[in-house]
Length: 510
Image 1 (spheres, rainbow, N blue to C red):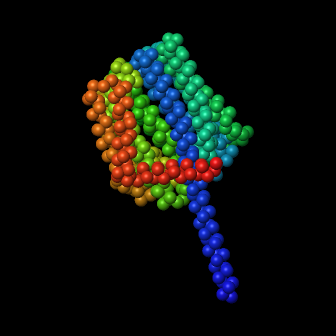
Image 2: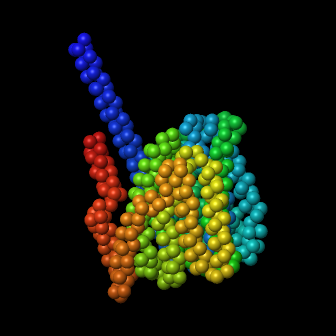
């Protein structure tokens, strides 16, 4: 009997040990898959943004600020219309646990119909928009550039399918292919003297080629099926996301609308160019995190503790990466603009610095909101958006009479209040308060500020812009990395461990 009992005990222990090893292996595999998808998404964003950035530099040198200003005026309306393309249903498909072909096909047909209606609205409204800006030459530009809405209707559900199934390698091929093709086309037209039409064709061809490549590489196709019942179920979650996105998009573009109406197109061009440079960096990191984080968190939506740990890690790591990039760009803004955009764009420097500070805190927004979305709380998400936009509009309406710079500063104040508002629900949902979040990110931000101040002294040495940056960039990187090691920053050690593990696993597989 004792022998049997001992044998049974040994078998049980082996089973427990085997189960633990299996769970550890599964967690490691999931972690590696998430990291792999992040790398592909990050590579796609980096490639696309680098190409787009180079193109924007060339076009900025060839075209005058007024051309950029006119396109920015139109973009206010097309960006708002673009929100309807998704209708919040793309996010609903990613969040839904058991979404199938019937769900995807129903959303595809619904979205495409909505896009056709939206294009018709923009086509008919073009003369009214042109009259609003007192520039009738905008009518054909509006009608052509609005075609991106219809094309996006074809692409939208393919993107949701890729995100849900964590197939981010497909994004890499489609985005980079579309960006490179449109880059050559846009630059060629600019050299040929097409003015702002070069920007229009570049944007339109980018979306078209991106969609074509994604359609070829992703095998999913809409089936001949449609269900109002399924669509209504998705809309119950999606309409709140749509309303939230509309509020956010309208609010983010209302400044451009006001600047274009109350001030000059050059003012708007400088404001937008100040946003564009830091946005190139931020979109690479933030979009990559956002794309991977939502589907990852959605799979863990029933485990609040797991979501909290993942949210906390996302905030700490992404801030650790974002802070030095934004602070470095802010303190090196003048030589960057002089070198890249030439002297005629120097008025955008103060806007660039304000946007850098604003964007530095975006990881906190992204992680908090993704945690809320992953738990299916689109109702709470909408309430947050309404609250933030009311505060932001009060600040905007109070400052728009005092110049474009005052409006930019109001955006900075609005960001701080929005960050507090976004984190508030997770105080109860995840037991992760705003105070804890600030404590988590403070070391990275403090080190980034110290780094920025130290490299800014190089600006006073009288070197050329190129030489100044050549000194500042490696110096800043060395200061940040050495500071991370001396302070034993958790995020630095975590990333170092992940990289070592990833390299080891790749070598093992080989």
